[in-house]
Amino acid sequence: MASIDIQGVGKSYGAVPVLYNVDLSIQDGEFVVLVGPSGCGKSTLLRMVAGLEGITRGDIRIGGKVVNELAPKDRDIAMVFQSYALYPHMTVRDNMSYSLKLRGTPAERMSHIVSAAASKLGLETFLDRKPRTLSGGQRQRVAMGRSIVRKPKAFLFDEPLSNLDARLREQMRVEIKKLHRELGTTSIYVTHDQVEAMTLADRIVAMNGGAVQQVGTPLDLYERPTNLFVASFIGSPAINVLDGILRCDGEKRHIKLESGEQIPASSRIQGKDGQAVKVGIRPEDVQISIQNAGSRMGQIELVEPMGLGTILHIRTIHYTLKAFVLERANYPIGTSITYSLPAARLHIFDAQTGRRIAE
Image (cartoon, rainbow, N blue to C red; front, side, top):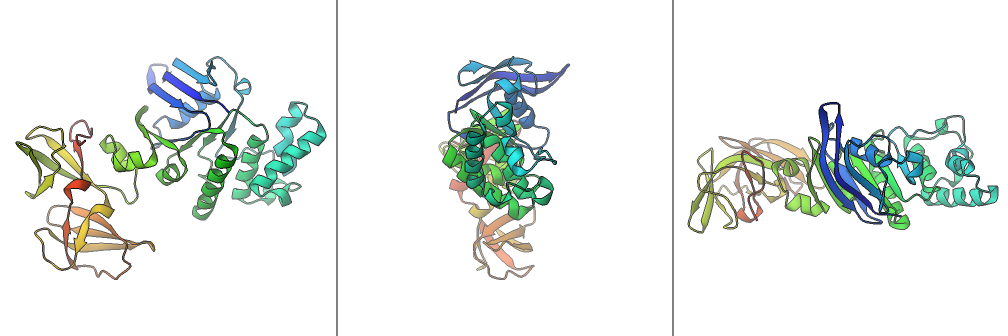
């Protein structure tokens, strides 16, 4: 195992920059997830750590050693790809043991290592089968097993679950998390799926436009997003975002929405009177009632039953809100509903920069 330090790393293709001054320290044994939309630079950064992409500027250290000029084979890392990359003519056993054969590992020792890895991954009964006879989930486990037997300093995962269906993805997330807990190997995992990021990570690195937007625990990013991008990207159902103007009267704060409504706001907001803002509120924080006893009224225009709860789309005169409720009760389309937006649960961002302005 080893720490990974990324210091001032940038990447350009000719005159076109794709990564800007990335600084990231990954502790020994930590599971870090790089998450962001397609084209944000997360896979490029992972490939630079692996040595599959050159570094334009900055340094990457693995275990304290600068590896900028080291070949991938000399970095002592293992990479799991989206495409599995198994040898189709080899059995599962041979696929998993191939790197050990190249190292000249004695046959008895090699058999013991492969059997132990297969046991961890539930592959004991598949060792003599070819990849074409396996399901997608089983093939991905073989790809992970091939990496495990090497006992590398770090695992690098490049969207390994993208080819699997929803049920298999859920199952494999659990297996990967259990495996990391057992092995304790430093891991970097790339995904565009924020659910994978939230459920797997010790820390999440949210990326957009070639730059790191925020680094923190999953709950840090969910409860205190540093900017509007992170707030919008993390969370399902997505956060509600409304336009407004910040009004300050001494220590008192409120938001005047475009609709003319006024929402009380926390005195901790570090903004100026008249500042254009974006107001975010998570669907589960929208409080609703069908008693029609409130100043904010709307109608239900869409209902999404989720099993665990229900997503309600509430149409007002000026905007639409999503509310998430745990009740499974039937909400007829067109039902009048009262809603409120608690000041303590608002996320306030500057409209121009997108930066968070609430403490």
